[in-house]
Length: 221
Image 1 (tube, rainbow, N blue to C red):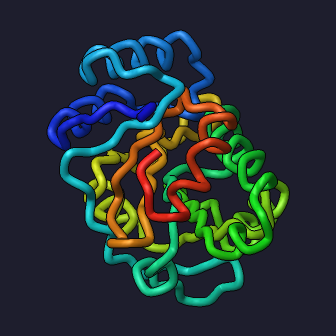
Image 2: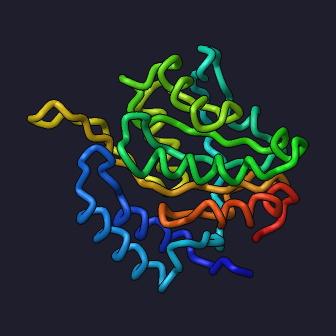
Image 3: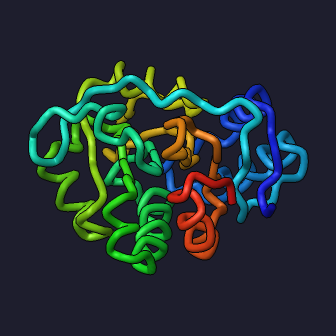
């Protein structure tokens, strides 16, 4: 097994340290956070996922998809391997890289596997990420990805339920906007619809390429 086990309490502590201000463009600060998170997790390799000792329940969340329709996360993803990520489309670095890595991995799946997988991107900046803008951004990554927007408080509560902490977007003096959020991807198994695997921002497309076929079979990588 490539993944190491980590207690849910340790995940919460690591996540708090790994918050990324995607709009800041401060690479040095982000790098420092990654180091701290690695220390908390007991030496977890940044390019591997982590198996949780206590899986997360899937958030009970209903938001608006990129077609402007209600999307019930639990109902729409039940029985499917699911990758859940919280980010925003104006992020200059981490969010597009993460989704691109996942897109590279999904491109190597069979048609049946792609149809069975759910990749859900929930915006942390719902005031700017409308269904239309979110849809256009995700289509450039992979048109099969699902994008969700809606009430920030509901999004924040859902994120925190899986150990990912986000803050409201803020506008800087120069007019740029920061959306501070945890950068982890949560992997849910189809067998029990629980989040068993946590991927940090250091995970590469090769890791997702290796892990996704197993997740689709309900297996831990």
